[in-house]
Length: 352
Image (cartoon, rainbow, N blue to C red; front, side, top):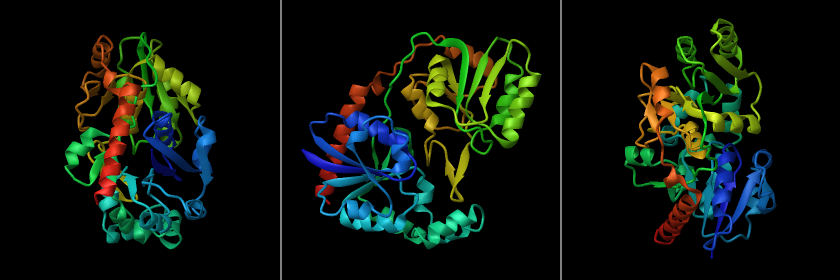
């Protein structure tokens, strides 16, 4: 039995939860989970297996512990802590923003003056931002969650960590219901284009914007609702969408429509969706076994991912009549793949 630790202090509670679910009752690995209170509050199950920790107490909590290796779920902050962590344990880091990871220190420093200055100065002065490169260099390897990125990057330091699996399957989704998951922010997704496209739909569609809308995007939705003909319905939220509502609307939808922008910026560093970072919407599609429409610029070879066409209404109507095989993301299969990946990391650790 090999002993590993999974640490998440910052952001990706859904990935941590998925890892826990897949590793439950593992006969090859014992996993200790070290989560911050912020993460624990977002995980509804397995709480009895979690060690509550914080950036200030993490290293002390790990004293006298013996692990074959550690998986760090997010390394976007607390670089002063993580530099020490990577010197104490063989560490693998899940990589969410590949261009940020390889960005030179000069670019990171320049970004401090562009946006979120107070927060970024805190990272610089209190959380060891300038140690960012050292943390990633100390890592045994970087873990990615999608084969497409692995293929595109062709980087031997990147290794696949399969975490996405199908949790829900609705055999009879509503053919005229479309879910649009994600925070309603124009810089992340092209909502202006969606608003313009929806107006011309001829069939009685229902559209669910499953993310908090505010500012200009909220105003755009309010105006759109007034302009829509009676055969079209939209629902949006000006506050956090509950997990139950999110699940319900996606499970009832025949397709996810996700017009993500070609690129976004993380800490002032440009990231390309499908090439240097994945879209969480792909994880949604797998989780709910639902086909997804993404822009033509998104690189992917999954059969359930469609590149958006000019006549989006006809495309949605044609997608609903097809059958998609999500068997490769069956929980049992992904569990086996994950354990194999972890065994390979164990071998990689001992051979280096």
